[in-house]
Image 1 (cartoon, rainbow over the protein chains, first blue to last red):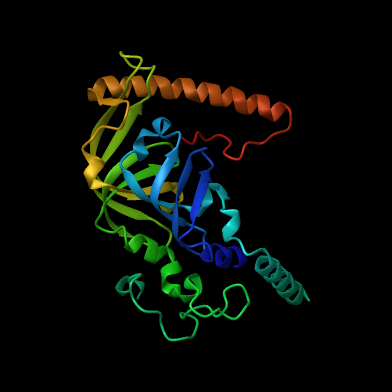
Image 2 (cartoon, rainbow over the protein chains, first blue to last red):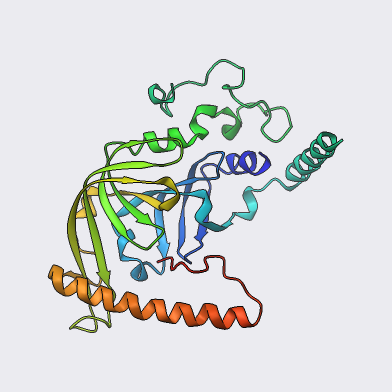
Amino acid sequence: MLFFSFFKTLIDHEVTVELKNDIQIRGILKSVDQYLNIKLEDISVVEELKYPHLSAVKNVFIRGSVVRYVHLPAGAVDIPLLEDATRREAANQAGKAK
Amino acid sequence: MMENLSISDPPLHGGPGGVPSGVLGRPPPQAQQPQQLPAQMFTTAAQLLDLTDKKLMLALRDGRKLTGILRSWDQFANLVLQSTKERIFVPPGYGPDPSRGLYADIDKGIFLVRGENVLLLGEIDLDKDDDPPPGYDLGEVELVQSLAKARKQEEKLKEKSKVRKLATIGFEGENQGEVLL
């Protein structure tokens, strides 16, 4: 659940999603769900001419399973908070394992 | 129960459905926007609900592009599309005019798509819908179909030899045996 929560803190920021088929889509992150399906608004496609099917598309829903990377705006990531949360999650996991 | 909610609804009172208190483990800071968003917004259902009854472009795992009106769906992103058309593209360099690409639409009717085959769903901007994609012209269906088929065959062979070469030096492709286009 950590990454789900993490992505929720990035809502309304501009991110670039790179898919496993090499398409890169930049847009405003509008929603994310438990499968890390991602919804982007106002998209622009890197190398748009290579992907004509996206020329009339403004918002996309991307299935989480086809995402390779999400490029984040560095300024939007609260690193101490993320470190905290990671340790907490690790502690939780360790607690469960016992 | 999800069906009756929308993103604009206020958050449910507390409980498991309510605002996650301190998403990353800290108490939610006052008036910080992400934490205030209702939890029901963050479900597959809520995301698809917004797209229902709209004209969409659907990219499938096998490279097909479908357009149609989204009529129904479930939590796995299984989808029902109405008035579906398959749009095929031939990129510049493969058609009669090497500087232009070609596309054609084929009527397909109603489609039920299993969620695992979905790559991406795009909401079509109706203002731009009637314009051909930049660099592309509408072609005759038979011509575009045969050109696309020939090109697909060629790509398949290329991909196959690439995967084989990579395998000899120890790489297993993440989409082995499948061409994602």
